[in-house]
Length: 405
Image 1 (cartoon, one colour):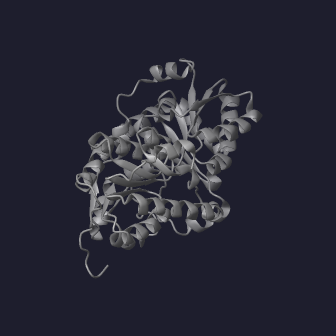
Image 2: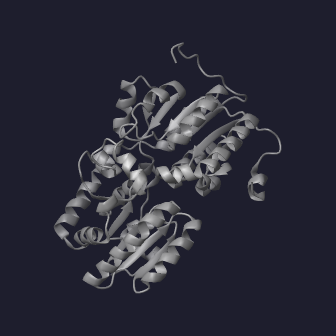
Image 3: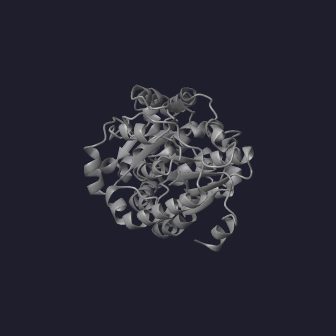
């Protein structure tokens, strides 16, 4: 633990505490809004657990940094297991010390469902915000969730019915991105903010928020950028850097593409997308964020060969991007695994940049996605669920469960 983290630990045990777990960049963003709402309601509330810099900025105390457990893919997870187990032990030791009134677990199902088992033994009420993708694969986890979780707080409309059908307490709280994307500047203002040429064609490249994703994706993105430049002349490319530790590996890869006009943007992914005419986006929350900003996009993803082999036999969905899943059809192009080539990516980006008919049609269709997600303010709803647990000090016992669990 760093001296800065140690300084944030209270000298005396807090009367009221909430445990939160947000294991990667998008969960850190969504979690930061929840931390803010909880702190607004009770500035003395001690909120601790696993999180990132955005949650810390709102007053969260990290026992474990989210970057310590953020990995993707079967082989990558196996290699990181010792580190993940150590993180879980540190978190549980903190839970025993601070005796939180409740826990909020965000996504990260393999880690969080194991953690939930141990938290239930400690009689800590568990809220699960941002559901595992049980509708895509390993649907059997719903039975485990029903046994371990007090309430699911889901962000996709179709998830609420799924859980209700299985008898799981659930509430649709709205998608956090709808709340987070407010008072947006226009494209011209975003370009001025980022010091980008106002008249240029600008393409956002979002390789992912993990080092493993940078390693698998960025080379192909830059090769596609080179092809686009050869075909169409000068283009400006922007790469939002999701975390400080990613800047060095990104810069190292850029050394081989000095002829390209590539700008690295520290954070500010939203501004980078707003400033762009089209975007290539790593599958994940960033695809929906880009779509809600109205930027035409193509989605890509690559796993290690072993991870892809296993997942391709387990996943039962026709699309992987949130944009297509919510729309219920293939609204945007997906380039997955071997389909993700520089040539294919350059072809699709060319269409999004220069085919005005397709470009305008897609932009209009993206406008309708927000309507499908409603106008809920997710962080307020999540914080309201916790209010009964933090209105009085001391651990609150769980309600009686049936003898069948």
